[in-house]
Length: 62
Image 1 (cartoon, rainbow, N blue to C red):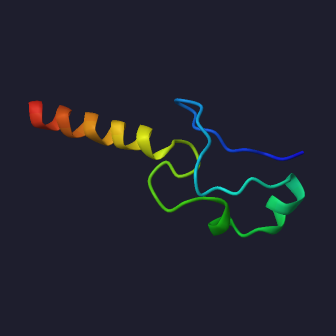
Image 2 (spheres, rainbow, N blue to C red):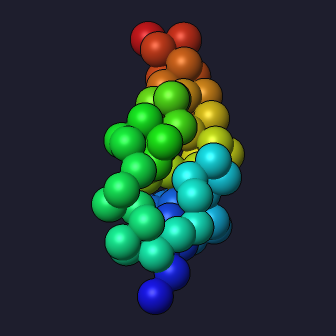
């Protein structure tokens, strides 16, 4: 069975996270299983950018 990591907000496949079986994933180091950005294994880059932009707009409005 091959696992595909998906964005929890929009459901798109996460880039940079390997599409491997459970056995192969267990043999890989943690740094190889995720990307180095905020919300790395949960959200895609578009959703992260959307959240950051919304936060900046909220701060600018205050």
